[in-house]
Length: 250
Image 1 (tube, rainbow, N blue to C red):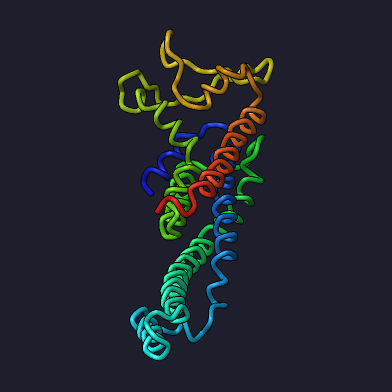
Image 2 (image 1 turned 90 degrees about the vertical axis):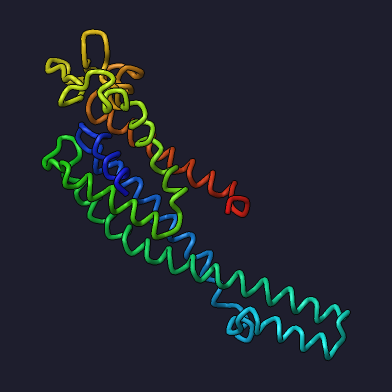
C-alpha cells in the first residue's frame, strides 16, 4: 500500500497524469471485480442438500450410500467425489465472491470521484491534485487489490509505476544527482515539452522524460495520452496474464 501511494506520487508532473493513471487502474480493478463476481456468483445455484453440508457430513452421506449400494458401487464413489468437489468449489467461490464485492465497494466510488477530478485536472488543468490525492489514490487502489485477494494482478496493473520507480532509483537513492523537481522543460515559443536534465550530462530519470527522449518534443496533452496508453496496455496485459495462469497459479 505504501509503495502504491509513493509510486503514483513520483509518476507525475504533467496535467492529467496523476488522476488519469489512477482512473485507468481503478477502471481495470472495477472490471476485474465485476467479471469475477459474475463468474463466482453461480455458487448459489448449487444443490442446497450438498451446499449445506460440511465436508465430513458430505463424506458421511457418501459412506451411507456405499454401505447401502456397496463399496464398489460407482454411484457411491461418484457421490463422494461430487460432494468433495462441490463443497470445495462453493467454499472457494463464496470467499472470492465476497472479497470482490468488498473490493468493488472501494474501487467503484473511487473511480467515480477520480473521473470527476480528472475533468478538472486534464490539460489545461484548473485543479492541482498534489500529494493529497496521489497518496490517497495509491492507498485506495492498494487496499482494493489486497482485500480483493488479487494483489498479483494489481502488480501487473502497476507495471508503469514499477518501471518508473526502478528507472528513477539512481536519483531517488542519490546515486545520481536529483534536483528538487524533475519536470520536463516547456518551450514557450512552440508549446512543446522537452526532457529536462539533472546535470549537463545526465537527463532526469523518470518515464515522463524518457518518453520525451524517445518520442521527441510533445505537447503536454499528447505526452499524457501516450503515458496513459501505456497504462491501459499494461492493465490489458494484466488481464491476459491472469487468464493464461488461471488454474495454474495458486
